Length: 514
Image 1 (cartoon, rainbow, N blue to C red):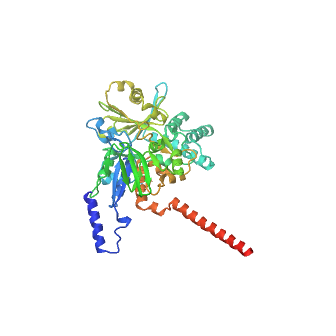
Image 2: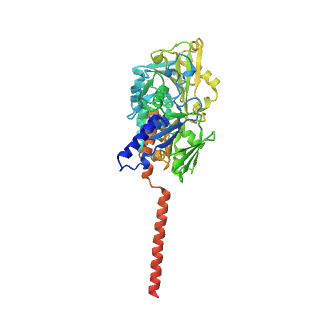
Image 3: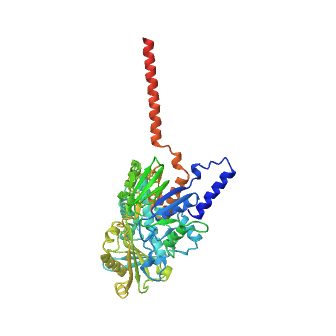
């Protein structure tokens, strides 16, 4: 028992001696043991919130052997003398437009350096190698035209009341616009390239009824030392806060509710069993969909249906370090549209040099191609050089040495199995209520996929979900929810009493008739 818990125990005991009205055997004064399964930001947020209560002992179980963090992976070991922003293999941006993004405030409190992602430069390369470059006000005008079409298309689709894939809705609206409206500022193929590059159009069957375009704005804040530094501060705590206890190499395989002992049992692959008062499951949705974790009894039907129905997609990153920076150093992001760089494949490149002074570029891949190229690193490297050649010149790329080449594998990683959750066609907003709902009395759920549609698949949504799951446990939400078994038993007893009354009434009637 650590000093903090010893202090709490002594305080409770002393209080009981002074105030006889206090029932020291009360459940509320007993120390509770809570296990968090999953060491990503959702799990760490849950653990940090629970620790603030003082009378709760918390432990986080993480499956990986070398790190915690989930899809936060600032891979500093990949190269020497780098800043976190240079080697951000996982989540890399915070949303400044989100109303409930506590992570930005947290980064400030931790005194972590943050910067905006910077300006955007757009390159269009045709099949003959001819290139057109947009920057400054021209980029703003281009994307303004794109989003006018997107907003109009979504409004029409939502007013029609028929849920359809976002990509179909947007491309139909584009066709209609150029068939019915003359004197367009940009040619149709230019606008189509941009629309097809949007992550929302790359994902399969993204619901147009539930898509909120405002979620695609505001991703422009970077932590210079990396998101890993932010997570490390959350784990370590600040001031008088206790650090979060994390156990690595703990692959959870079974979670069982033991109603007789009023406990939950967590069993791991190393044949160990942990007994706790509650568990917060903060695993990625892909892992839960795979059913690699067995729940006893099985999860309720509505929970399993929600996990099955929520959309899951793929994204990955390529981190490439050169001997020197040979690209425009003051540009924050390069977008490229070509025959190779299309439909979400290596179209967005973040310039780490502008933030760190180190010659690193980070490319992004969205959709099914992310899953495909994770298993073909050598072929991927060739395509990376080809796309960067389209951006900055093939001869320039040949003249510079690649010092670092890293790519993520979130789609095939057994502890992630996908990196994007989203609303699919036919999903109801109530689906997220089912994802958030605990399996009472012992199992709670956290993760970006459990948040409302407006917070699906982002860091602050994942963080908020962890806090929410912890507060569900702290508030005693399961104590307020009637046990369905007890409810059924009461109903059965009531029915038996009513049947007995009816029988007695009939027997009395027969006697009177005789």
